[in-house]
Image 1: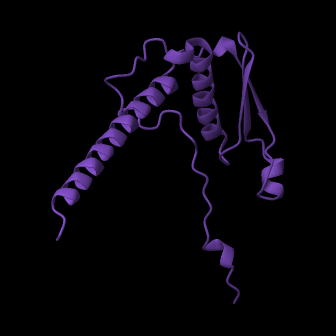
Image 2: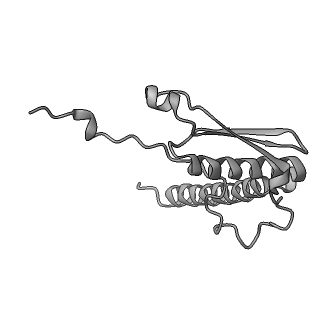
Length: 144
C-alpha cells in the first residue's frame, strides 16, 4: 500500500481581480466613463501554457492572449488551468488597462487609489492626535 503525499497538498493560485471591493467605494467612484469591450475590437488567441506543472501544463491550450485592435494593448493570462477562467481574468485586465489608457487620472483604479490615500492620511492624523494627547496626559500626570 503506497500513499502519495502530494495528494494531500493543494496549491491554488488566486486570480487577481480588478474588481475587488467594488462595493466598498460605490458611492464616490465615477463608473460612467468605464470602457465597454466589443467583440469586433478584440483579437483573441489561445496558446499553450507554460511554467510549473509538468508536461500537462505545456501541452494544454489554456493560455489566453487578448489584443485590443484600436489601441494595440495586449494582455496575456495563464493564471488558471481552465480556459474559461483565464478568458474572464484576461478580459478584466484588458478592461482595466483600457480604462487607464482612455481615462488616465479619472480611471477607476486611480480614483480608488486617491480614496485610499485620503483614508490613510486621515488615519495617520488621527493616530498622531491620539499620540499627542497621550503624551500631554503623561506629562500632566507624572508620578512625583
